[in-house]
Image (spheres, rainbow, N blue to C red):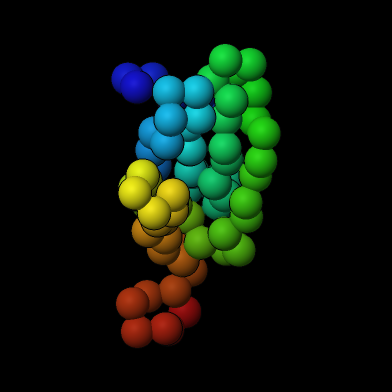
Length: 78
């Protein structure tokens, strides 16, 4: 897909032609969209982590999300 259904979308993954996953830095969640209905069917919070990238593994039916906590560095310091 070449478009995004949410503002400030940073992650995008296609599962099937009718299902789309989006993730945001500000929203800090992953949304599952029904493309035919143009509606969110499920929403998963990532805590206080922003979604940086996503990938769909069709063989294993698994979504992988790379996240980052904006208030913490890579060593765990604030």
